[in-house]
Amino acid sequence: MPYTPPKTGEQLDLNTSKELEIESIDFFVRMMGILGMPRSVGEIYGLLYFSVSPLPMDQIVSRLGISLGSASQGLKTLRSLKAVRTSYVPGDRRDHYFAETEFRRLFSNFIKDEIMPHMESAKGRIERMESSLSSTDIETEEFYKIRIEKLKRLTRAGGRLLPALAGLLKF
Amino acid sequence: MPYTPPKTGEQLDLNTSKELEIESIDFFVRMMGILGMPRSVGEIYGLLYFSVSPLPMDQIVSRLGISLGSASQGLKTLRSLKAVRTSYVPGDRRDHYFAETEFRRLFSNFIKDEIMPHMESAKGRIERMESSLSSTDIETEEFYKIRIEKLKRLTRAGGRLLPALAGLLKF
DNA sequence: TGCTAATTTCATTTTTTTTTGAAAACTTTG
DNA sequence: CAAAGTTTTCAAAAAAAAATGAAATTAGCA
Image (cartoon, rainbow over all chains, first blue to last red; front, side, top):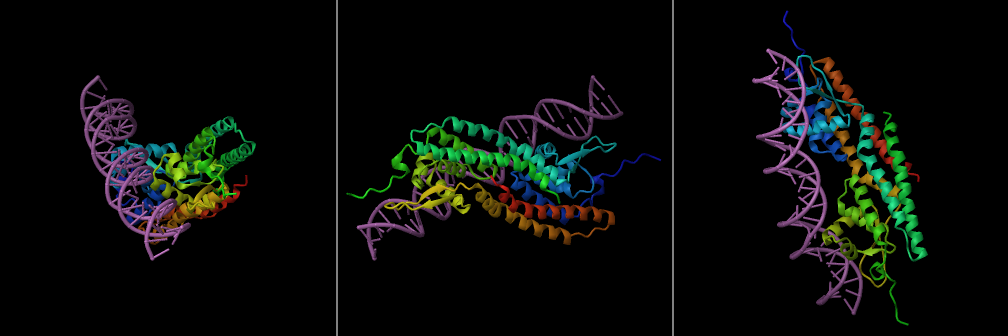
């Protein structure tokens, strides 16, 4: 009996109901948009989210009608956020991608990679504010001090709250 | 004794320490950037945040070196988020703007205006997914159902968590 | 009411971001 | 180790977002 490789998405053809797929892509294009991600990233994730079997990159390209470059870039982004992973398909040397669906983890990665670095650099900027604080007028200086203190509290709160946020996503 | 109008920012001239101002603008340009706001909006808020006295629009324009159009647009955005307010200066028909510094309120307005509408439309999209759910294969259908359920939980959690988030900003 | 300063609007320009596609770089395998 | 298949990279093109500035509108004042 000859070896038959397992069916992958491209042979299956009716991998995903077409309407579902469209709604899913729409959904994630917007969601990723809120998070400041380019359209193509949302499209890819949306396609994979409702795909029963993992898809190789050229399938993603042809189904979405995007370029190889976009697909490669988008998958790189999604990989770095751990929003997609690859699975090995015997007898096929292409990588096959599928969506990671634990949103809690996705958000915590997003916050760690995209937000926290800004919070870090904000600290430095506030320190510089404090050192440049030398007013002639005592009343004015007090005003500045209060504003700086507010910024400190803001970044402190943000730095604690944001990482905790993903944990609150108990749903 | 002749009437002397109260001094406003433009007469005061040394309204804000120059370095503080620069750091502040830098800070808020980045912060607003995270929230997807254009540079000019961050610049304006950053300028006002450390301004001892409220500033009229033409002062904002000349100090930041931005156009009238940008300033007007940016102030409109900030006003709609209630991030700035105007104060009346007797003997001057221009509006004078100052920064609202209660970040808690700022965030809750931002979430309400910029995020929640998306969550609302997401609900509709999920409903459409459910109605287009008619698979031949029972196993596949189950897969779709689980994914849709996850999306529901995500939007439900988001819809509850996000508005509560600003309240957590107890700092 | 008419005049003028102040502000808003919006078509155009500029800048920034994203996508494309072809070349380069890998990687497996015969 | 060559050949074919796959993925990445990156300069150039396209698209999207933001800024400009002048015209239109609005609002305060005499």
